[in-house]
Image (cartoon, rainbow, N blue to C red; front, side, top):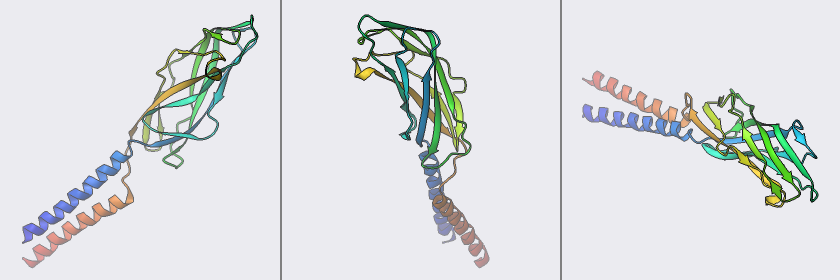
Length: 211
């Protein structure tokens, strides 16, 4: 009879540990709320500047790991017969994590800056040879709360479309992956685990006393 009680308590403890592990695994897909701020400089531009960057200024979110939008390069139309050439024209995009799973993360090692250059020519309203070449990210790995994240750019270099295609918008996409760092179990799981361990200890104590 005493052995049966011990096995029951042990099973309860194992179940509690399983719930703790499940809680830790659930942290592997955090919902990331973010904004960006981007700009294209005028250095190296011959002709009328027609390329700008539309930032993600309102809170957007995605479940990481995932690709997501840093914003859009926008190419405006030029009059027929005119052209603008970009030669190593710098651009930059700043990525800021606002919340993780609806809460402000601490620590929060963002913002992270993504940089690069534009090269090519925009002709009239329907021709573009411009490509955006992204630099290696200086600090690709960073912490947000209990997650270690890695930011990368897959579409590199990125060809920019003219104004007659998709309204001149070309999305700059990034990819964010993450790994839990010292994941914190949910309070309910912790309470269940402690209750199971306490019950097992109490049964052992009672059985020894009865003996």
